Image (tube, rainbow, N blue to C red):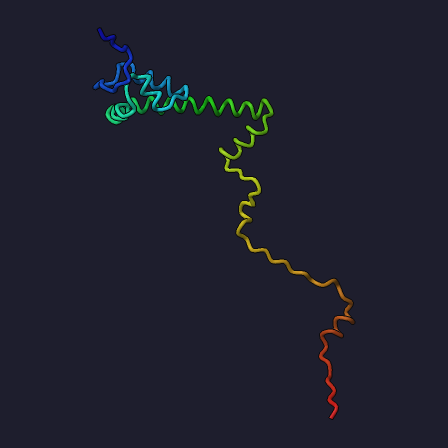
Length: 140
């Protein structure tokens, strides 16, 4: 006599279970990957993909669950950075959320820089000696 498996991940079910959206939302919010989502519904990844194409509310439930996970992780990281003084968390948030890059010169990266070095102040007599044309003498 063969015993029937109560939660077979065979993918033979034609329609998703009635509570699939609620299950997918909860599992996605807990960070479960697609293979785990399929297993949680008792199906295969291939059939789950078919269901996601045929039933947009299932994809919406996964998206909503992922957003809940994202919010929870971001808030935990933010609190660690701000309230807990975790410098690594603060640096990560600056990089991920605000585009910060170490050593970045920003808008100065492609600018041309020209430096003029002017001589010090001269007395008027010394200046006129330098700019007054000299008479050339020719020895013939």
